[in-house]
Amino acid sequence: MSATKKFMTLERFINEQEQMHPSATGAFSGLLHDLSLAAKLVWREVSKAGLVNILGITDRMNVSGDVVKKLDEFADETVYKAMDHGGHLCVMASEENEDILHIPDNYPTGKYVLLYDPLDGSSNIDANITIGSIFSVYRRVTESGKGTLEDCLQPGSNQVAAGYIIYGSSTMFVYSTGRGVHGFTLDPSVGEFLLSHESITIPKKGKIYSLNEGNFCNWDEGMKRYVQYLKEQDKATNRPYSLRYIGTMVGDAHRTLLYGGIFAYPGDKKNPEGKLRLMYECNPMAFIFEQAGGKTSNGKQRILDVQPTSLHQHTPVFLGSEEDVKLCEEFLQGKR
Ligand code: P6P
Image (cartoon, rainbow, N blue to C red; front, side):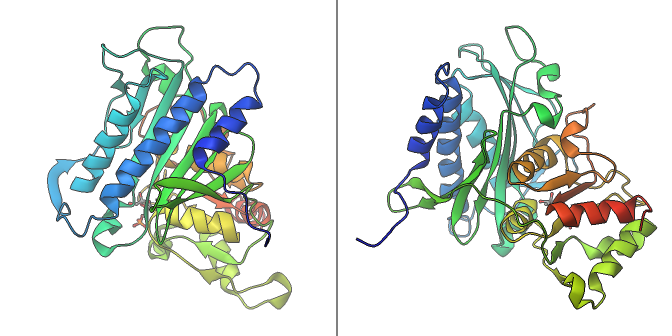
């Protein structure tokens, strides 16, 4: 028999991980199982988006001022409805909703908190470019009853799980519960996520940089000098780097995680805090990258150490290979 990868479904993997924790009640596993179902329900619509004419612009604007497309709304409602009755959560918060999302009164509440970006990169939907969903799980900090804003506004270092679903050439569920990063590829013929990338580890150094150079003129000097440095010819330091940018964080981050290098959305003169959201995009991705041996920063400190003050606050973000993010910080802090 040829050596083949073990046939491991996401469901079995979650259950086997739970067995490593004798005190586990099964609530955390139940939450992850529910998230896996939500991912399949969103995938089902995303995969036929161009066929059932659910594309198009609604008149609804989300709190960040982006025009919300119908698929955004569907994904947002789908995740909420898949997660609201499992009894594992005391509160949720979505990038598409200004306020926290309570668990309906007729459903039981649990000890976890879910924050999610239901459909990241939605401006790319009509062009059939990779999009994704992102999630973060925390333990509640309040004692009991309905979850509160305090339960949602925790530093990323408090996450007990984080991950994303990438709807690309294939659909993958990538997540970590603090024991490494693992990727599962959806086999549509059986409707199962199968283990395809066990223990993902990011290279210590890459040669790809991923950012929107269209903002170059608004960057501060250190950022400009860093990107210029990456473009100079120097074989000894593997330069010039290549630029790869999809314009969907999940896609650009996933490629950076697997191939190495750096993904960045810096602050600039127009938006000092950058464009990406701390709670819904940067904290979950930072958890994943650090679990894979990478490094994260807001230019000054570790993303996961930032104490949030509002649900939809933005942050400059630098994610990637340890050596690449370290070098970028040296330029940003005027040390190079
Ligand atoms: P820009 C998508 O709209 C998003 O929120 C992220 O997924 C992505 O990384 C970023 O914005 C792209 O922004 O300004 O380069 O188009």
